[in-house]
Image (cartoon, rainbow, N blue to C red):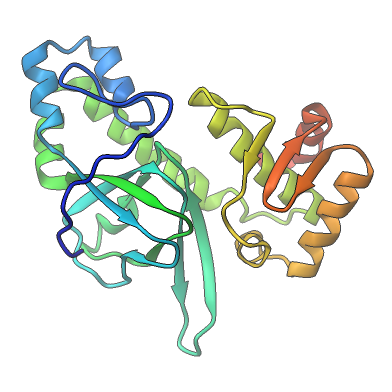
Length: 247
């Protein structure tokens, strides 16, 4: 990935400093869980390079790029995707603030898919060799890396089953709800930065099917949609629908 000058942004809910990571950081829990002293925390902070902004449609990584670092989304939304030999795109996932990109590149030492910004994106870049070396000395950081890798595997397999369109769409919406809630945002109202076609591609459904399910969810009082802003009106019913997927 080309070098970019570190730029400041204003992510919510908090910025980082020499004593803590910003509130969206995927590694902040390691600091809190370990009770790191100033020296150890500064050592971890020294691995962070803030890069961006990336504009909508801009590549963060391309399929086949050498793997040297993992990147945590600081602000914005990104998608991962691959393109087959005849030019068909397959959306593999979406990453939100606090989520980490790049674990699937460890084995082959190259990115197996492309990563693109869906809106204005800032990243925190961590040299993976340096992070791995530091993890051997900070037990909570090592544990967190394993948990993040496990989450990546689970996320990739989430929609692999034979689920209905209703189950897939409900699980998709609840995934966003739970992510935002875990980072201090509203669990009920959020913006989907990706177009419906990308959602359908990711869910392995036709775009018309996703639109039809969303309209029916609105008619039944489960959600309200205003362009790309979604409000979950009945989370309990959505959880019932999504239970086979999220289990």
